[in-house]
Amino acid sequence: MINHKFVEKTYDFLKSLFPNRKESINQIILKVFYLIMILAVLISGIYIGNHFISLKNEEKVIEEYRSIWKNENLQYKFRKASAKNNDFKGWIKFENSSINYPIFQTDDNSFYLNHSADKKKSENGSLLFDYRCKITPDSTDKNLIIYGKNNNNLTAFGELKKLRNIAYFREHSSFEFSVNEKTLTKEDNIISAASC
Image 1 (tube, rainbow, N blue to C red):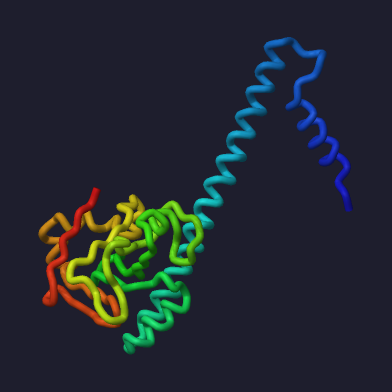
Image 2: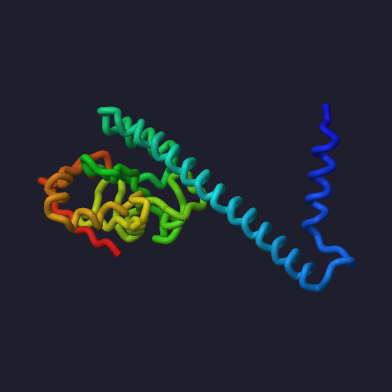
């Protein structure tokens, strides 16, 4: 059943928001200002809502990769991750830290800086190997450069800045780095990280 009083009051309220010819110029300016502010709040709300929905979707995709990476068989992990995205080339994981991500590679260094693991536009981007790094089934360069954004929400390489604290570094110095179906640890090579 429709509440006619409510509909009538709502109509009167909405009608009062819009300027009419009987009002003074000051009232009209004030109402136009209010309408602009309401519109700005609505647009901001939509933008913020889309941002958080996008972050949630990106996290869901990363969790799908992480579930693949829980398997013990390295060949299986690489095969499954490559099936999800043919640009997949490796994985990096620091123990007791949020750094636990797939690494991709394309023929330029810009694509994954603003695209997620499912190749959709993303403010956070993904981790990527420099396009000049040779990563083939037959051989891999000894020196690999990985790029990732230093995000304020500590995704991607946002947590790297914490590693400058020596106590934090000691607690989080254990890592796994996999590329070309081989897993390396800190004992295998030295990693240098720069955070901007």
